[in-house]
Image (cartoon, rainbow, N blue to C red; front, side):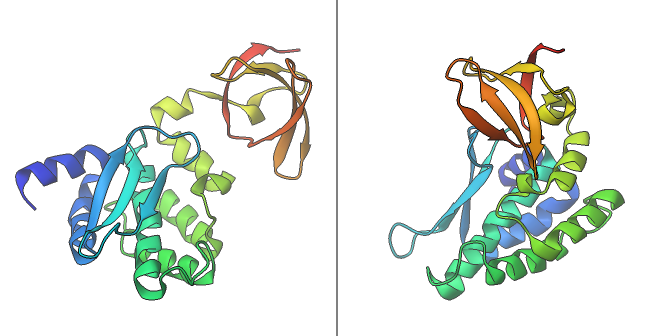
Length: 207
């Protein structure tokens, strides 16, 4: 790892993890791209366009170092599964879950993650989700380490009947919770939507 590569990794990953991260990049011939923020995903994996080219992993630039590392390993698991099974394996099936769990174990040490996060990750990895955001307990804990996200208002924090706005200008009113998501009505279209309880929103009116 040259100084430039080290400086780049230190910018996004927990410091104690960068040697292991770099070893994974070299071992699996991966090209890591730091991407602009994407609302639909935190990262992705792409196989080579042509023979001889590296695998490609991208991770959103605005993630906290802990989330950045978890997302990187999530996508690395896709790479490892693809290398062994091609497109035959289910993207987030049993093989991927086992691979993700095995790869994460290398990073679940106190030098990299706080003990409470290690415990939460161990629990989450027993049945890893397609998106880390789908594990609400883990996401709440990760957000507590991210000053920007900790300062945001989430749907679950609002009282029933509160009005909130999304970045695109649409205004919603919060209603009851259905299983894991909240039922909310768009005031412009009167259509109903289900919101992740941890979705960040801007409060407009609280009853």
